[in-house]
Length: 177
Image (cartoon, rainbow, N blue to C red; front, side, top):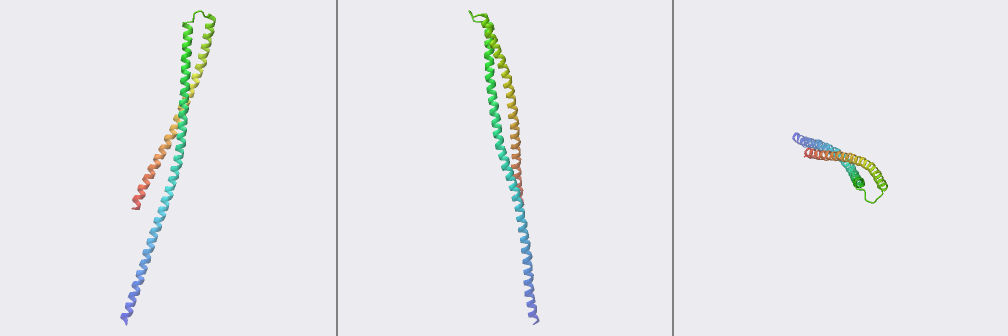
């Protein structure tokens, strides 16, 4: 009979010990899973933040590309207008030279002088206009450089963000394996 009690005690004791170990093992597994879920949640939160930053940066980049394009067009227009004035200046200078050196025969000298004065007046107006257009061109060049610098900074930021995203995905890949 003693042996029967001993056998019952061993069977129930072994079952209780086995049950206790299973509970501890389950608890450890649940704790590990909970830790993993929290880590994944944190990683997802960080990734979403980076994605939002990337989207904002891409939007700013697109806007800046438009600004660079507009500045480039403005510079092209300024250069075109300056070139037009330079052609007019050259033409007026040639006209003055022609009137001073080769006065048309049979034309009243007073009329030649009047035409010469008018041509010189036009040349002075065109010279002033050329100076204004040169200043406009310089301003347009500076604006284009400024806009391009902004674009370059945004592109650098985007490159850094892409690099950081790549580095974090490599790190998270090596941690989870």
